[in-house]
Amino acid sequence: MSSTSPFKPSNVVASMAQMAHDASPLGQHVASVASSFYERGYCVLPQVLAPHHVAAMLADVRDDLATQSNAESGCGARIALGDALTWPRGRARRVAECAPVGEASYWDALREHAPLRAALDAIMGAEAWHLPLNAGDAEGRVVGPRHWYAPVVFPEHPPIESERSPVEPGAPAGAAACPGPRRALFASCQDEQLLNGPCTNAAAHARWQPVSRRRFCNKGWHLDIGPGFPGDGARDLRTHDAAQDQGAVLLLLLTDWAPGGGGTAMIPYSQHWVARELAATAAAGEPPLSHEQLNTHFVTRLRHATETQGRVVLACSCDEEPAHQHARLEGGSARLEVSADGDLAGHARLPNDIDGNAPIVVEQVIGCAGDLVVMHPLLLHSGTTNMRDAPRVMVNGMARVLPEAFNAGGAGNYVARRSHEALERMLELHGARR
Image (cartoon, rainbow, N blue to C red):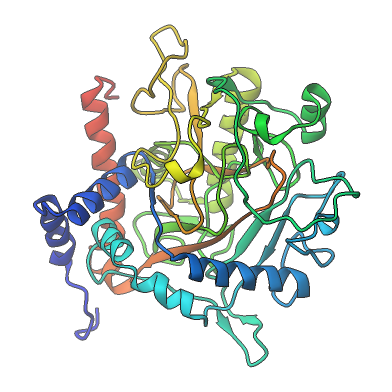
């Protein structure tokens, strides 16, 4: 490690100890965020970006999609967020992407947001992380690794062609009474529509499903990969590389995410499944699994749990509108509990585990434009069907562990170690130690 590096291994422990004894609202809030990150796998920070910055970033995403200047997968034609006639429909994929250049002032505002910086310090250690942005050329095109991208999820049932009035992305709409937990469906989106018919905003909270880019329900579960890291690269907690320096995945909401409106689906505690698999592979002296192998392993297990066992259950989060759902430190969604005989009840049992026969609970992120989701890099998650009538927009990036911090035995290994310790505490608490 360079002698000029700002990182000191003691910074990690010191920052956590300081948070634990900080009685201020920010200190207690950040300590709760770090605890939720390591135990449940994700949390939500409210209003990380001010409304005028959100509007500016959303306008840039809108322009990129319309001009295709930085458009990526899913953008076969120009798309206007305010014109439903241009949105994908029929059998077309519902996700379009662009990659914004990291030069606007809103990126500085994001990097300088004090609660976010405090949360990332608590998670990875003070001065042990950085937040890289997309580089651009003289013409405003992204060059080099794509550190941030903007996936836009369009409605499964876009407005009919006669409706030509502009549509504001993410406009919240009312919801009917909560239907309670329900089983995940393993079927194509076309079959889901044949089974349940067209969907309205009022029923969206009871119709969404995790989905793949090819629009097959519950086939889209995955782990995020570091920019520039190959799919056949080894996932190994013991060495530092482009995948291992993932500190925290960041999802910045640019529109309101109402229930059933395309918000990301999370499996709480699933980062422990992945860490357990990596640790078992290392303990057995076997070669590290590649990213693709690790993904395939859990996708296969989740398919079996959904299609054959019927264990994957979708929690309902429709009891409040987005404006009332800021910073749910429990993850931003309603949860479930599984009784001894496998029935569904009120709150999730800890941990939510793929082993055994109990239901696996899935939560959908809901929130307001400007909120930011901080997600564990090993958490299994998925896109969802947008059953409302407006696009869902976000930017997706990553806070990365500095190489010198990882090599010093600090933040990189610290993330893995704290995740393992959190699982051990939960297993002891609930008498489920293996």
